[in-house]
Length: 334
Image (tube, rainbow, N blue to C red; front, side, top):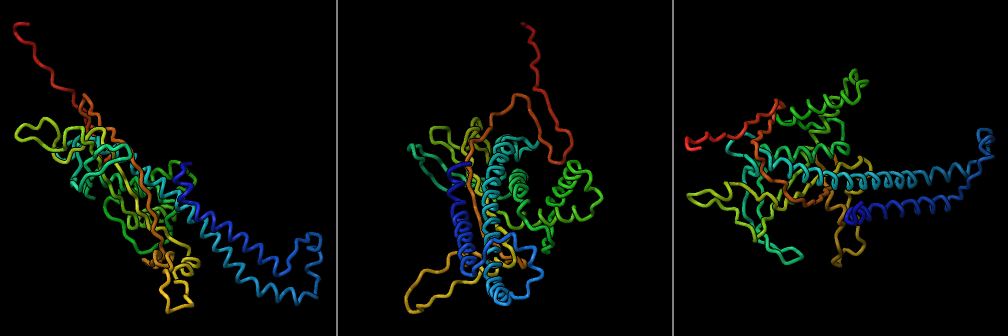
């Protein structure tokens, strides 16, 4: 587990620890004691009016704290999955960007569109040209789908009225086949495909992937020399450029704690300028679900060394096409 991941989960873990201490304090106030030997006489006890009243008074705050602990546990899990989703998307990016789709638009190391946004330097003082990849094209769709599939475990499975697009329908069919192959006993459960589709639809609707490419200034610029294209083609990136992927996801909160956390904390001093409730400001309601935005960023180097044998990657599942290089005919003098 990386240091950044521990730091990201630290607030949620601290909240869980404080909530457990609050539960212990609540039990101490109500005078509860662990007496296992008296459980046998509990159903015959008719002198527990005071204990019953104490139980009724302390049950609502006890349940509220318990739900808060459960929600913090879910937030910690969501934080872990968003970090994993960013790594999965970055790994997919450095694999799909070098792939050739068999056309002149997205061949090896080429993407649909890239836009120059400025320069930056790293900690060692190296200068990089920064390019932003626009969210269009089949390669970007594959990268986004990799991020969403990593987040499906934390997406709600109930129907929220979100429809799948064409790419989502194709991905859902592949997920259903993979799920049935790994768990054949669930083939008779007709609710599994619907739940998978609901999870995938929520993930596609509430997940945004941003791709940034950093090209080192010591290498040839990402320009197509005219008229001789000897370096880079249009929308091509370097074979060892840094690929930075940022995943933004709207994490679905539980209905009860989500509604409670979405309410701003009241301020007693209305005249003084006080800081706003940062948690409530970030929580919003979409499609009947309270969501909390999370993001993670991963940086990997592109694995774009071009193959000697042209290899065309298929997007439809059909066998890829390979074409050997053209052989030169021997000359008459040889």
